[in-house]
Length: 265
Image (cartoon, rainbow, N blue to C red):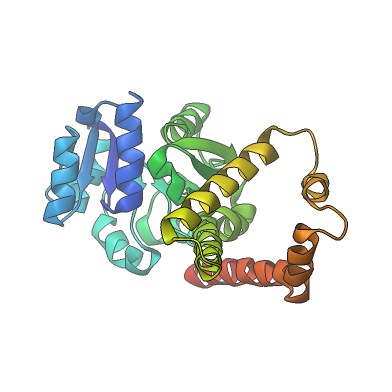
């Protein structure tokens, strides 16, 4: 049967919205090349405004597309997989944390599965996605890469590293937001208004990241460049180290990676 659309999508949450919006706005795909299954009325309205087709159910999407993006939570995957069994499935593209390629194949009966771990900044075109397209042809890999490069950067890492990508990058934006929130609260404690503290914190982090990306210096060298002997930065860094800041970050990533593994079970 000839497929009606290039990309089908099951699940219309925040990540799916960001990916599809990016693909349409960057003209990687036209709205009429996409079919989405999503029961929530407000989410359906979002896709309709983009000119994207809407399906009555998940099975209709699977039977109509060349590539099927599974944009659902791992906890509801089994129910979705049950709906899909028994139909000739296209290439599946999963953005679910933890669920392995083999587990997805067993549950759905699919032959070809790509796993991708994007992160939240894809909603502003600055995302980072780790990919495993080892199951796909060169054409399929190019399609997946193009889809995620419409909302940021994509790098092939293989399935073995996807849980690590989840812990560092997939969950990483929340770590940055928590750090920013703590920095803002500290500024307010010392007399700044919340608006002032937020402006200084955001610009400092943005500028620091830009320097890290463009400088030929290592991160250790950049830290040293800000840290005058006996100065304020040294005092702050000593406090961080006393509180085992680096160990705390490592343990947080460990917890995220461990949870990703649990979700595969």
